[in-house]
Length: 452
Image (tube, rainbow, N blue to C red; front, side, top):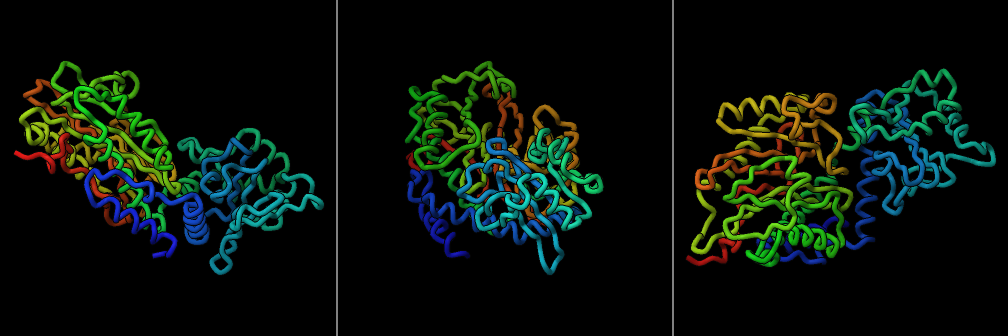
């Protein structure tokens, strides 16, 4: 393992061996160490992953153009750690010179982009930046030029109308005919996780899990006093206090023995924010962090024990098992080359055979939370998702296995939704959870602390 990553590994594993132990700030790398790790991973991706993807997609020149504060989503992932945005207009050119020479990495800019892209614009020779780009293209004579426009993925649609128009004004007609969408190349770059990334991703997922366990504990929740909104803002503040970031505002929901039924629209936009948490409640959280340019997205449950209870009621435990089984039904069907829509329909068909009422809305994860790659259902599109659902599974890609199982709980005289989400990795042959998954509902008080 790389010597720069080893301190991160040791600190995290020494910190997270006790359930619900508060996360120590020392578990988080300082800014300088983060920068070193991010740049090291980016260099590895440029040198090892990029050539493979360009050859797979048959694109020998890839051009990415952005202006400051309106960055192409792909370009954002290619900037050095010390570049927080593009500089003025940033042009990146990647030219595949073949297996022996590798991919040439140029920036049509006044200076190098970090240590990774060499500046290739002499303003004294060619004052117009677009003409400088055109000259680079003419000198290299590419066969196929990929630019970032896409109908199916916002991630791959980063070339703006203005930039596209100005580019065409200066590009000779013979090369305009060679322009193609770099959609699949962009998605491949964004979705593929390298060895170095997968060395640290388990630690990031572990950290995210640990924060959930801390939030779903007596340290944060006092039944009869604490509200769902209190817990939500505790999560947000904890992320900030630890020096981390998140890519979405957490949600905390309650299901209990009342007349309220689960509805997605209610959960997403109309749920009450000030419900007081009471004994007998089943709480659900949707939570994620961003760290070292990778994201997590996790949903878990905790049950508030009633006086005299020592464990989660059997009916709810059995409901949770159906949620776990639905996860298995989906991930057992992961095969390279299958589309997201194929996976969705196969899994739902098998769930129906087993008597599970399931809804699947699984998505890729990585440098974005809702990332590029095969969409495996949406909560309101259970017959398939045109476009992104037709994209196939490739090896070395990560997913948030997001779904719910609707189960009748007789004691509550209602349907309970077990809403689960865990981050996993597909290596091309098999699927695994990056830091395991919840297989048992947490309790408050914790069962480990409760004496019969």
